[in-house]
Length: 112
Length: 111
Image (cartoon, rainbow over all chains, first blue to last red; front, side, top):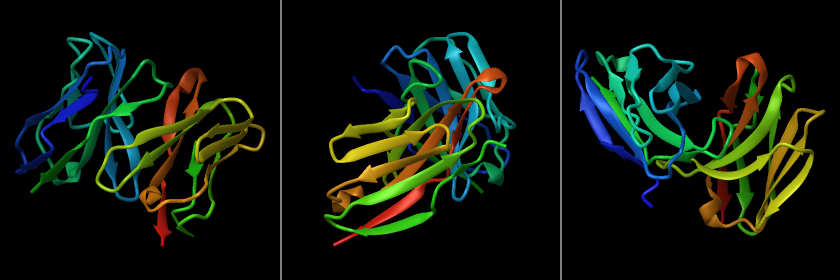
């Protein structure tokens, strides 16, 4: 099993550009989530999904969209990148919201 | 609020024992997680406590006191590879279900 995979590992964007961070899991987990991690801020939940076709907002959803068309995939879209979105992004999956979470390796995003 | 408090940094010596504390708001408590995160890597799950007491897993143990809103992670026989950040996360149930993450404790193990 590959677990949780994320692409790309590194990305540099210019302000105003859009892009999609990919996340996939092969553990048949219903719950998937996106976090960003910034120094001194800890992990903050952006969006989450409790199953295919169901998504909801986390603590810091502004500027991001998600969709969940399959159990396996949960892409995160940055609509119009801003320097404040410079961060490390982690995708995670688990059987349920309060179960052990399995994290992807992360995407290090810089917005200039 | 539902703040999670844990020390920012700790230092210990190889072979020693270290205890990393975590305190949290007790209202709505539904479980506590510990994760390990090495620099530049993703968090990985260490332990989960929902009942009072000590859970032991090899060199790592985690303790919970629900009435006191307190947990600790105990690392024994420290090794250099244990140098990492240790994240405490608390699950809250009820109308405002959420998982709250602490900022992490950065542990440096010195030879």
